[in-house]
Figure 1: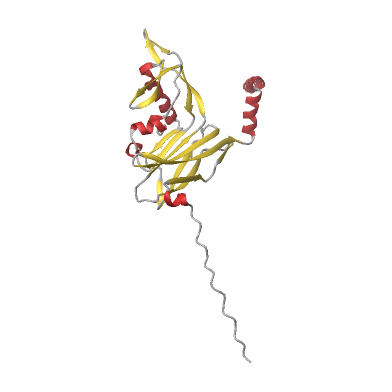
Figure 2: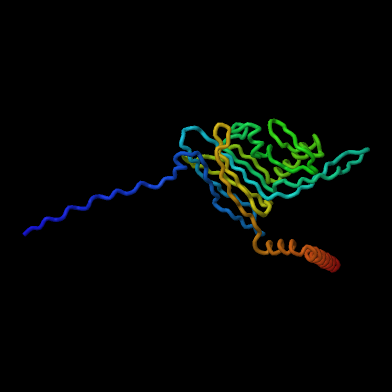
Amino acid sequence: MIQALPPPPPAIEAPPPERSEATATELRVAAALTDAQVKVDSSFRGATLVLYGAVFNPSDDPTDVVVVVRGPDAPIRLVKKTRNTGVWLNSRPVLFEGAPGFYMTASTRPLSDIADFGQLRRLGVGVDHLRIDAPEESRTVTRYGVRDVVISRLGEDYLDWRRAVIRLKEDAALYDTDPEGVTFVDKGLFRAEVKLPATAPTGQYYAQVWLFRDGEPAGVSNLTLTVEKVGFEREVYEFAHRRPWSYGVLCVLLAVAMGYGTSRVFRRG
């Protein structure tokens, strides 16, 4: 007797893949770094990190990406050579408190083509719009359509001193501007390189990835990066900061010992 087989169970349809509604309906940007920690030792000669990300754009409107990486702030002291009765003398020192030790921008095209002067100044995007605290700030005014522009005791000379700070940092490869540093490798996918020179300061770095559309900021992604000393260099660094007096005395003793040893060698020669 042949028994009929039961009918096969109904096919179960696979659920549709999950999709964020924000991804589907909102313009936004997401980014990450290949390495969020850089270790500095005696063999450190600089590093190149890759920042990559994606633009989620539900429309066909073109967008621009601007990457800003800022290192820890540190004071910088400047003097100017002035000629007085035929003698060159140093001017009164000027101390800038809030100059970032490292600053770079990379973008899909020149910043001036992405947004207007006022917008970039308000966001502090670009070396020309970088906020550097002037000494003895006295008051703020409105200039170029931007409120709270700092006016210091330097007066009109402030811009010359500020340009000097930027020029010195650029010569040391600590400030950089790349108007074509962000490239799209595929639809919505982009990359940019962050090049740290051997003289890059240690500490916490902050990266902002701005998304612009029609000259207006449409989104931002914030990242952090740590540059720290390791090995013997770290131990010396921490000792110098924990016990500055002991470190100073030790350096003097080492210098005296090396001087004495060198003099003995030359006497024998």
